[in-house]
Length: 314
Image 1 (cartoon, rainbow, N blue to C red):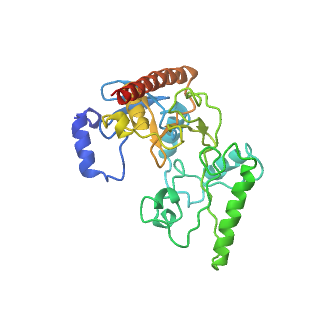
Image 2: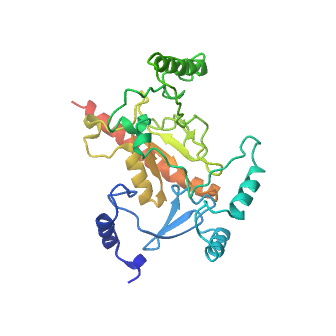
Image 3: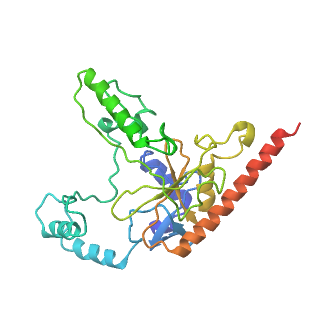
């Protein structure tokens, strides 16, 4: 039996036995078995079509014929690492440099996004990581992220840029007073922008805002935090939700999957819906996703109101 014809339960059992648990599955309670993809669509073993809002690694879409042809032709000649001298890598870098500002003139090519933070040396300087593990080392000093959405100095502050700069100055001075040499590391931020794919802030009570995070030259994932009125991550309150519902972001991504839209969550509170579709994602795709997201969030709002009504009853 071909691998893509193996029953999903058998594939899952083999994965759980043979693949490290650190390689996590999307939708672990009911994984999707994907057997092929084309453009912005992915297909499971039953032939069901999903709109892919996760796999931004395939920037121009899955199985683009020109990419497939180029990869096939190159694999027939040579497939090795970049430590050997070869024309292709320098020719590509030169063509790329001609499309960019003069200052962006040195390149470092990777097989996909530059994921980082999983080495022990980097975990020690990553608050996102060490706060959930061994804690902050005494030689690490953390300045607040310049976040005008949830940070200490927000959009209503008279001069948030100066305030955040002063925080960095304070941290540097503190480290210097302890006789430490300074090595600065800057985390990526999520600036607030107007969203076109997801509902704008205020449309639903739990949708906090729309953001864009530029992760590469060719893709800009959209993110939407689900939060409470106090901007805390939106998690179900036992007294309100009776403990029967999943966290809103997880519940939303699961229900979207049931509606054939693949979407992931992110953030320390796992309360951010993250959209990473390929560039061939169409306006019609966006409308379909918005319509399904609208229906799901509307239903969630109604459930919240219903729970609130029940709680207020004697």
